[in-house]
Amino acid sequence: MIETRQITKSLGDKLVLRGVDLSVKRGEAVALLGSNGAGKSTWLKIAAGLLQPTSGEVVINSQVMKKEDYTNRKLIGYLGHRSFLYEAFTSIENLQFFARLYNIANPDERINHLIDAVGLSFFKHEPVRLFSRGMIQRLAIARSLLHDPEILLLDEPHTGLDQQGVAFLNELLLKLKTIGVTLIMVTHDFYQINGVCDRAVVLKKGKISQDENIVGRPVEWIQTLYAGKEITC
Ligand SMILES: Nc1ncnc2c1ncn2[C@@H]1O[C@H](COP(=O)(O)OP(=O)(O)OP(=O)(O)O)[C@@H](O)[C@H]1O
Ligand SMILES: [Mg+2]
Image 1 (cartoon, protein in one colour):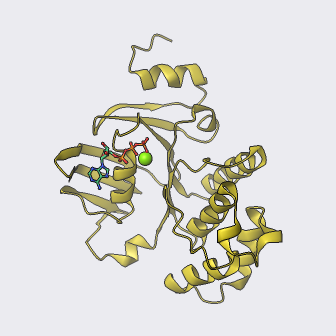
Image 2 (image 1 turned 30 degrees about the vertical axis):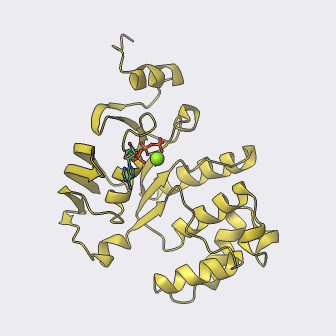
């Protein structure tokens, strides 16, 4: 379970987040929506413990996350706009590096499994600097899953993926959901929410403007919710 309580964040002279209360239960999958600049990535980084809020707190499994709280941070997998991958390293070397960072014992089997799962089997020994945008995204997804996180925070995870990549990612997310992984996904692509997320939260000017169950709802319904119009059906 992950919760943010009254999160505010000032960046430069802007109040980017203005009191965000959001609680997501174990195994729940939430789509975080909002226009460019609404504060989604900022909120996600704060929830991941990568950025300190100006005020408010992040609570993981009933424990308030402290500044250097690596125990709770290890429960979180985070995929941001940036891949965090090292260009000079190969796929395997990148994941070995992050495995060491997470203190994962005997990571080789898991690394190979993840590289295969994201469809990069033929590129295990290629340096990342030779990768296409979609290949980088695939490896970044593998990186975010390496330590078997129980909470997964994904910032526009479908970016750059081809049709097959989108399908594998959605399948993977559904699988993770069935084993109780908590999922929060920022996206602008409403078609990728359908079937994966149970709930949609809309962030508008640094505050939550909508928070609805979307199970069984068509994409048009989510578009209406996003637009903030009155929903009649
Ligand atoms: N380091 C920074 N300094 C000043 N302002 C910042 C900084 N980082 C982000 N901002 C501002 O914070 C606001 C929210 O940014 P954020 O990246 O969270 O938006 P977003 O909802 O993820 O948008 P997008 O859909 O474009 O990814 C924007 O107005 C942005 O200009
Ligand atoms: Mg963003």
